[in-house]
Length: 341
Image (cartoon, rainbow, N blue to C red; front, top):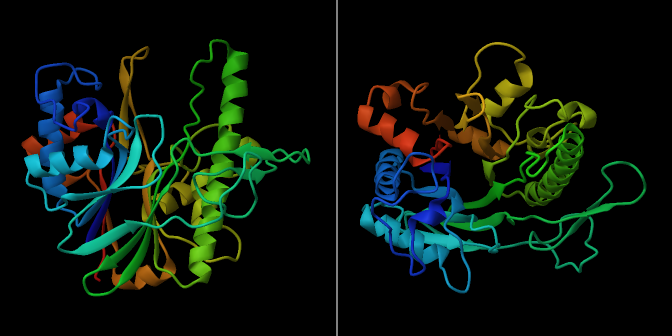
């Protein structure tokens, strides 16, 4: 089977309040792309990756007026995708949900959150992802209370063969110092955001360890907004959020070959999953932000990872329609995992 994670930049802006596709010449929220062109490009990309399930990061927003599920299922119907049934977990107010779009002929999926509910003061361990987590990151004996702006999606997946999987879709907090205007503000916000990001990662790792202890087959997939050695503030804390979730010390680890390359390689070529335009430099920046991490037991199923990069993946590069679609659809590229299940 094939699983995918795909961060679709401002997917929400491509639908009206009734979940209907805005296939017109209006500007999308993406730079220099119309809504019709972005939707068409997404249709090409989703069709090309042909996954059994896609963890959609930055899925259309859900609220009293808008339905993430309706928008995604309308999108799937319009482009005749196999992945035509949508699942969403705890919604948020960022217009960027985490959702699973899957093929009901291959598997069933349900939102299955774990952990206890918390009050406003939070709890340690692995509380439910729509609650609050207490953790002392700066060793001042005063634990910070951290929340997810986008609570991870916990999906209990059952293949029609009977095989069970635990999928956790994540969109970890960005470290970018949005709103900072002075160097001092940049430093303060960057450190504060990294503390929150690491706390979210510890919270997520605690949940992963609970599943591993129960013998579950675990797959963590999504956008970590982080990677080994990605910025200088990592040195203050000694590790990245990716390292925390994958596992450290003697505990059981999760596996992702692209993350492992980042941990072991200081110089030389690196895989990347995203491409951002930096206006003040008039150039593009690429980074490894998107991962699919699997538990030990799944490593026996001959897993194969692929980043659908328009320039680095030969098949993508040599297929002009797909190459251009990948560039127009989002500032991230899909990552797929093939497993012999």
